Length: 236
Image (cartoon, helix red, strand yellow):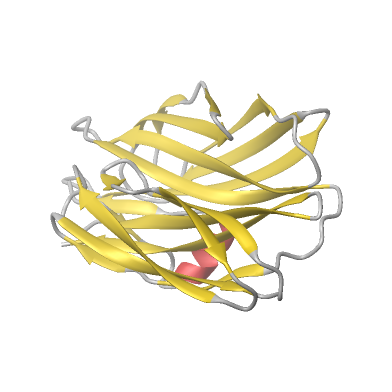
């Protein structure tokens, strides 16, 4: 079974509501969409994950997982998600954090009828209190084409005169591996920097199109700021 990223022909639209991971199989396709919503309250992050299969083959062993900071919680999931079937699961983790924008990640693990594993993934931001707008941006993030190995570039820009110390974390679904996923970066006032990110294909099948994410975090006057960039890796 090959595995592809699809989204009504418009990746930007899909990223707003979740991710679609689909692929042709003997009986057809599995197309998993995900629409997570998050809330921070009482030192807890609660994420409601709405998952649907828009393909014409059932997905097996469909299980969501929530990641926040260094913690994660795996959901109960369902044994089978049939074509046009939906599921909803709510996941929670401790989140003793201050004011700001904080990243969280949701993955959906599932298999096809042959028990080959796949993973849908999405990284988003949840807001606590009323932090100021971010002063660092990701003006561009390349997609990439990869067989055994490859790389893509992420451009970062400081939108203020103040020097910024950033953490760049690159996240990919299982099947790919970023060999240097986390970096500490300093940007002078108004400075731009382009970072090259190496990627290894471990188990992703040719024909797949998988989501890749760049997460930038920094502190600004007592608020934690997060900016997320996203694109697609095409496996050839």
